[in-house]
Length: 269
Length: 200
Image 1 (tube, each protein chain N blue to C red):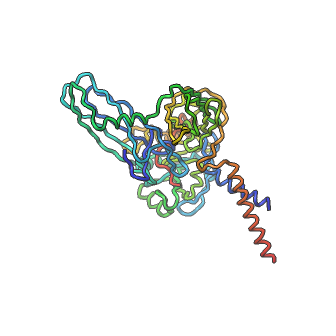
Image 2: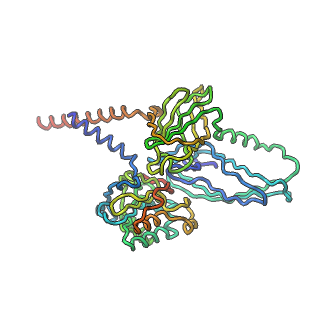
Image 3: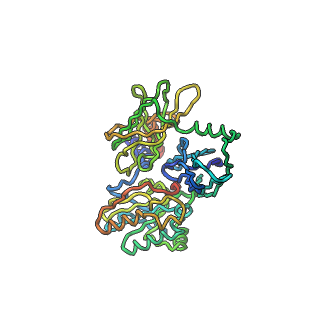
């Protein structure tokens, strides 16, 4: 999907608003389509809400499995695609798309597009092999303790939960270093029906290193019920700590009071 | 002077905090005081003793058009207001943003669509929307006669913009109202709402 500047589309959990791409396949006999494979999304603010989705360009791989035998010389893979593109307004769109492919008994040579598929696949969230993830959920926070595989250290992280009504999508996430790794906390959704059985989604880390790089990890862990405390909200990227806000507001209040006093004195004299 | 400083500080901080409120099922529904299309102030408290539905609306949003274009929303409004339920439609679109309406504009649209809300309230500053944590249009809330929130979420279980999905969808609002009227617990009291984001 190639989006114009300012427009976005949505991840499988769209967050506070929106709708992900839906495909209804029309496949030849014996063919099967897998699910849409979703690259790590980004956070997209829509006023005070946060949606999860994509801007610019996004490639969504779907694996189609043919049967062992195909009688025809060629097959047509067809699908009805429905999606939502939003900017400040939303446009529902749909398209019927089809591709016809030749059938042969000898594997085709790689097309110029082949490397493109490899590259897209490499950008998918990776399984957490070598990592240790531990999730505890309670009334104040859903907490994920992460011990990265050796050699990875993180400056910050965000957990995109892939099911609705689990976390508060628009809340800031707490982050604190613990021995051998870090702990990330998210407030539960205000009307969640209790802790989930499993915590699933994508954990995006900003890793240290020369260039700012993102690691996207596929998360699927069981949840222990407890009462973990929220971790502090990190103070960077324009998110100042609460104390700075309080100080700023207090100074503003002082300024106001001073002005009023001066005005009062001026009127009296 | 320190007192004024502290008060100003608290007021400013308070306004900053309002953005993150939410309406919790099982707890008292947040207060509402908004002007209707005639400019008259209407309060949620005015309707204590009745079942109340709150419907966040933006007539230009494709999800809202799904429910009005198919006649679904009007049908719900008519069926349940005839049974004594109070139906309040609320528009929290800010001036200049999609869906913003003045009182007269809202009345024209209501008439055009044959809608029958008990009241249509204007929330251009988003005060009620933010108090409720209204995220989408539509976003539906049901409040019992004691003022307790008994439903918060989607209008039905088919998140889409397609009117064809309406007849086969499970309508959560109707289910909550039917249960409440029969004195039963609401089976599904909270769902993820679907729609366009509210244009605060």
